[in-house]
Image (cartoon, rainbow, N blue to C red; front, side):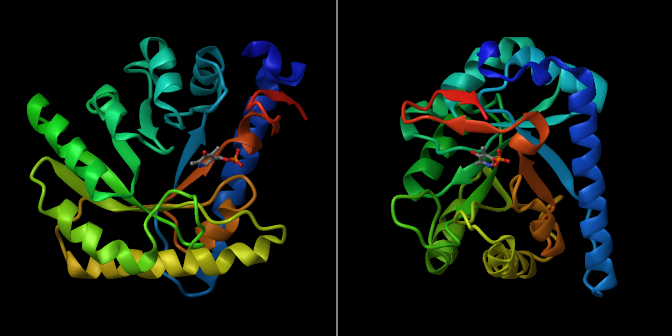
Length: 254
Ligand SMILES: *Cc1c(COP(=O)(O)O)cnc(C)c1O
């Protein structure tokens, strides 16, 4: 995995500089939100660490105070888990197959990609058998794209009702992956719509949601997401370097 990165990645300074830049941009986006008269929330930076080695993650934890990562794939999460366990918080942010639920429940503090009743039921079942309550986000397909994870906004209330009835699941909020947009401004409407759904969720649950989470925004869109109310942004390439995926899914230097 390591040789898939540019030599820059070996460089502590690059990591420090990237984290500093992203955090400054988040702060400036929050300042713009405040200036626009909107309620300002705390924003957590999650590093999306697909194809990033455990050593690089630990380096970022040490030199750039990284304390939260998100993995896409269960296999990759399990591979790095022994090296990272207890050193930082981990979320699952990618699509989760029902038959892999068993492998992640109890290992991550938040499963961000719950988008079906069947998946939620399996998380409930596995959590119950471990005697724990699992925190989840419901993933919204804000662009209503076919062949993409997440529930369509109109189907969210039904899934929410089902999930909230499970005693071993706690719905903390929403996650969305907007469609890829060439112009950054185009992201705004997806984030605005998802924020609206998040506010509905909070209002319906008044005081019962502990530390609600709205996870939206990636390297090319996190500033707009923060302006529109994200409480967590998931940033990968802006922190660890740009990856270009070939058709086989193998990253090459970009
Ligand atoms: C890869 C990924 C990200 C981060 O994407 P970048 O463009 O590299 O910042 C965020 N969320 C999910 C679900 C991802 O798979």
